[in-house]
Length: 232
Image (cartoon, rainbow, N blue to C red; front, side, top):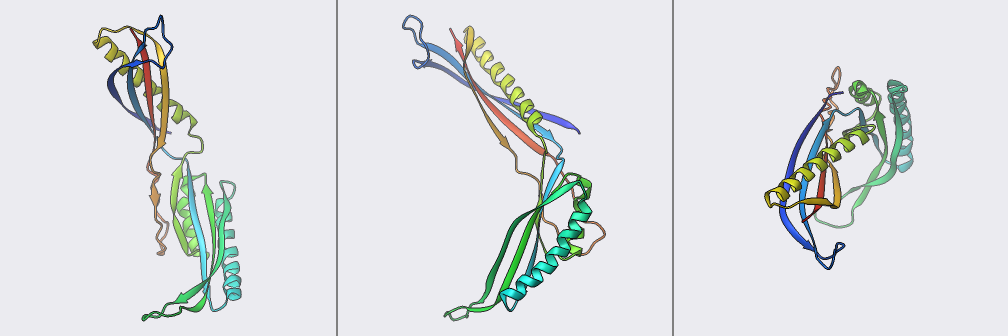
């Protein structure tokens, strides 16, 4: 797996008199505060595809029966395509009336019923994502909401981003202190903020094709660390 890091630091040139910190002989503690940011970029190794089957029929019972038959066929095909390299989890099931609304207002009329069954398919082999989509649609699935890419374990990337951000923050604070002829005597406070960039999403078309193309892209794990160094 390839891994690249993009880091930048933001220094806030502030010299604070912080009476809330422990004091020596009644003297306030002086601090310098700075922030550091780091972004670690990684290739995803897991995908989740939301697949559904929607049926319309004159009655709720007919819609339910049609949906059950079509869903069983579609989801079985997906399971066979996945094998041991993923799993399927039911996300929702509903039956609701379809309405026709008069153009000039008035009471809407029930024209039939819709049955919807949706599952979340987790794929741990990204080379199978296109095959899963194609298999599902060919077997009767008619609602592909999209694909979300992610990492099975992002702890090492989070740790790296935090570490780089902390180093940047401390370096900036020490540079500020040095420029002001101040001596750093300790770390008064440190806090972190972690964010993840939006996951790459893809809307899958239902048009017939040999294989649905899927580009995984990359994921960004971003961290910001704020440090406060005690100086004198």
